[in-house]
Structure formats: C-alpha cells, structure tokens
Image (cartoon, rainbow, N blue to C red; front, side, top):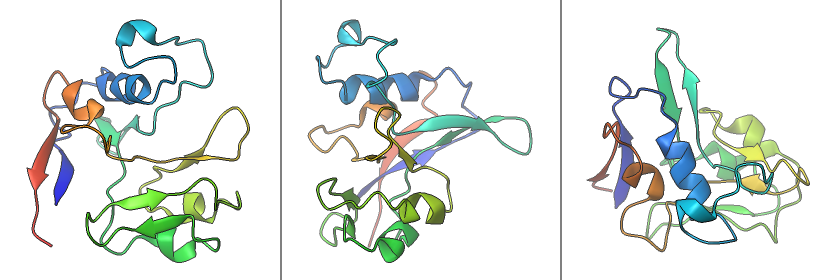
Length: 149
C-alpha cells in the first residue's frame, strides 16, 4: 500500500502541495490554468502550518491504521478500505456532525467553506499514480513510499 511521507525539514511553505490539491479537485479542469483562486469552491484538502520549532509543516491525511475519524463517524460516511488501506469518505452518508473533524489527531479534516456540510478529505488522488500534492512539491518534502500492512 502506498503512503505519502513528509520530510518537514525540506518544506519551505511554498504551498505547492496546497495548490496541487486544489488543481486536482477543481471542477473546471485539471490544469493550473483552469484554477480560479478567487472561487471559494476551490479548496485544498491539506494545508501547511508552523510547528513548535517555527518551521513549516505540511498537514496531510495520514490514512491512519486505526483512524479515529472512522471510529467516531456515526453515519458510516468515514470508512477504512481494508484492501487499499485508505480512509474513504462518502458525502452522501455524511450527517455533518463533524465528529470526524473533532477527533482527527492531526487536524486535517475540515468542512467545506461554502455550505459547511461536506468534509474536505484527502482521497490520495485515487485516479492518479502520484497524488498532485506530491507532484507539485518542488523540494520533494512530500514523497511516496510503499509500506507493508
């Protein structure tokens, strides 16, 4: 199973990972030239924060082995796919209770900015070999590895 790894000492807070995520989930096209940064619908499923050492740290879903978001989800919208190891989100089942948001130990999950109903959740760019956040990272602070289950 593939995972996104983070070397936070290489991160320069350029927000390339955020931009890549926005491009991938843009409804108007998959090119950076199609992305309207003023459109509130263009949201990233990751972000960059400053850590306790005052260094930038990319915050990306870890697709945890025992995910708290799945455990606390009362509607069954958050599930762990045992085959791929990914934590998946089904917006049609979501009750918008935000228990997943409150329980995520990494602070990754958030509600959409427009309707405040849909959880913005990393899907590992499931239709791509390499997720856009990894592809757009110029310093290779984000990279892919194969991990054993």
